[in-house]
Amino acid sequence: MEATAQEVDAAVRAAHEARGALADRTVRAAFLRTAADRLQAAKDHLVEAADAETALGPVRLTGELARTCYQLRSFADIVDEGAFLDVVINHPDDTATPPIPDLRRYKVSLGVVAVYSASNFPFAFSVAGGDTASALGAGCPVVVKAHPDHPALSELVASVLRRAAAEHGIPEGVIGLVHGFEAGIELIKHPLITAAGFTGSIRGGRALFDAAAARPVPIPFHGELGSLNPVVITEAAAAERAEAIGAGLAGSMTLGVGQFCVKPGLVLVPSGAAGDGLVKSLTDAVSDTDSGVLLDHRMRDNFIAGVAERAELPDVETPVTPGAGGEHTVSAGFLTVAAEKLASEGAYDLLLEECFGPVTVVVRYDDDAQAQTVLSRLPGNLTATVHLSAEEAAGEGRGAEILAELTPLAGRVLVNGWPTGVAVAAAQHHGGPYPATTSTSTSVGGTAIERWMRPVAYQGAPEALLPPELRDDNPLGLPRRFNGQLER
Image (cartoon, rainbow, N blue to C red):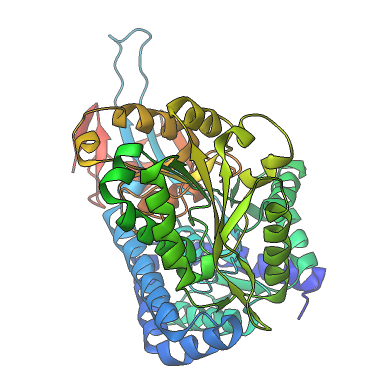
């Protein structure tokens, strides 16, 4: 199913020709809602196809499809509201220093967006996922590079979106779909592509990021590449609720067979009796977890090899050994290591790299200084978590200091929770310092739409020539800042 360079070119050009049909916000909001309705109506067929290719199970996939439809409808609401256009109007003011001319600023869509699908979310981060929904909401046609783990599902979803577009007079080319590794390279290089969204590995994402920057006209590349998602458990928290924290960690690290980008991959647990109790609870819970199927054999092979390489390091223990389960499955487990082993560069740096699958690394620390040293050596992450005692959560002890230490590491900082599960909400941020992501933007939540837009200001333009979004009488009823005052 590898697309040729000519087929990639045709898909991009068809998307480019369709961009005018998305100019009307009312039309594109209606399109997004219809797309959600049509996907929901095809639920049984789509879930069956997704399960056949991914083995993620009908329950998980049904929930993920519901999330995908919710995302589409959420962006339709954002498009209707119009605040994402960031309209700002300043009338002339000769008394200001320097004088202010007539200035009117808002945001416009970039153009055709390339979307690279993820393997682990065949609905929510694929053809109809958040990148596509937010790009369409911004008024940008999309060409999707399908993930090889679910090509048939990708075709089915694309066909649903195209039919939804046709219902609103939008050319079906507004959603392009290409398959194959080389097609992905051709896509990022195409001169009509104006931005890209990616979810996947550090290696693959970095190659595309570099290609986007090396183009004659570089383009924004919003990539989610990899994350360790560290967790700090204070001694007081471990003493207060070791069993609950251990069980919660087990549930989070094994959810979806450990194939979530926000899986907790490194957990700082205090030495001593309180930490021992937590590790026992974790051992019991993980030991009771069934083996599961990873998304493809390449991931399974990488998981088994990665676990084995880590377990071979001196003084690394495996209370529950992760690795091969049956012929196609893997078993969950975890490794433990003393914090002092991670204090400086060396072979143990391998433990500071993400291992995709149902495994985590438990780092036993003796004091706050050791924990801080480990944290100081971590790369950027999507999330960082701390578990505090009731007193620490109320402001006693180092709770605030730990939050301050975690904030530079991640885009989402959690207290007394687990990072798996990314709510689609206005205040959500799903991103983080490199290598978690290649930009400061989010790929989940309403502000994800900002990635596919750019600001433009008009100076001294006659009212009759201005787009309706920038006219004084506000014919579209948009939220805006007018001469310094916020209007809604």
